[in-house]
Amino acid sequence: MKHIKWSDIPYEKVNDQFLRKLAWDGKVMIALTEVQGGYVVPPHSHPNEQVTWVMSGKWRFLIDGKTTDVGPGEMIFIPADVVHTVEAVETLVAYDIFTPPREDWLTGKDSYLRKG
Image 1 (cartoon, rainbow, N blue to C red):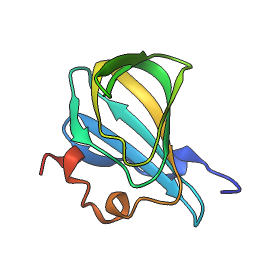
Image 2 (cartoon, one colour):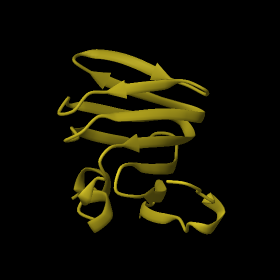
Image 3 (cartoon, one colour):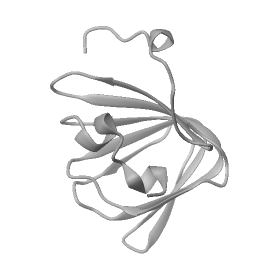
Image 4 (cartoon, rainbow, N blue to C red):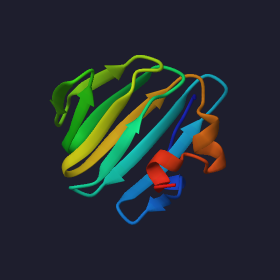
């Protein structure tokens, strides 16, 4: 991605508590997410690595039986195929960075976010 102007990308309402903007090219996908406090993403995994970078608020990750809070300015790396659960401890804004692009995010089939 040579140039991203987030203000030009509309939000997608995934559900009542989760808004997302998506930018992608053939090599990387970046999601800017706004999540209301209390929202829980059920256990899931990704076919490729993910980096989550929190701008404000707090995510709580449960990975391999361990809880990790990720707050403003912090990042977490999640390896491919690692099952994890995430809770928005506080209303938050974060970036998720994937490579290569996630087809389920592009097609709207990401049922773990859309609650089936």
